[in-house]
Image (cartoon, rainbow, N blue to C red):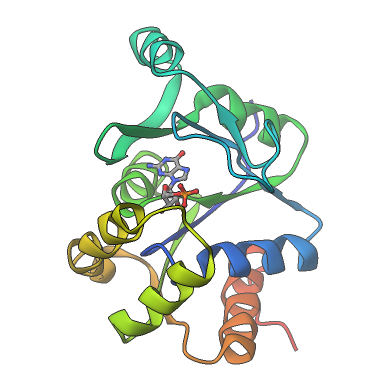
Length: 193
Ligand code: 5GP
């Protein structure tokens, strides 16, 4: 199978990586979002098969045993997330490049597996208060959820230096502009105007 390219976006929850991921998908028609599997429950605005494949813990474990994942992580206690090998091959078969929005460890694992055709970008902000505000604005049902995510930030930030690029999302307009430049350079081998 012909291998395409991979763009991996990782970073703390609330850093804006999902916004940037949607923006990149709207700007680069040759990019396709990798739909992950998760065992967390579906949110109001989410669609099975578009945002995630929502699985029971049993079916997730079955897929682990059958070696169907390219990577998987227990991102939060008892919540599993993973990228199916099949998702990667399906996108490459359609002659598109892949955009991942995955956690830091999963992102670095993919980078290690596909060192020659992947670009890893770490998206972060320089204040935990900004993350907190963004997470609250997302209306999670309870504080545990927000706190679980905030507790991970320090650990996640410690992996930043292992990524190809670090994007500080302070001004969203500037961050999007920079993201376009980095991705354009990676896909086409030149900077966009
Ligand atoms: P959320 O529950 O907010 O959608 O995602 C929680 C975290 O899981 C985010 O950091 C997201 O990037 C990460 N994540 C989503 N899909 C995957 C995946 O397939 N593998 C890994 N390792 N992390 C993922």
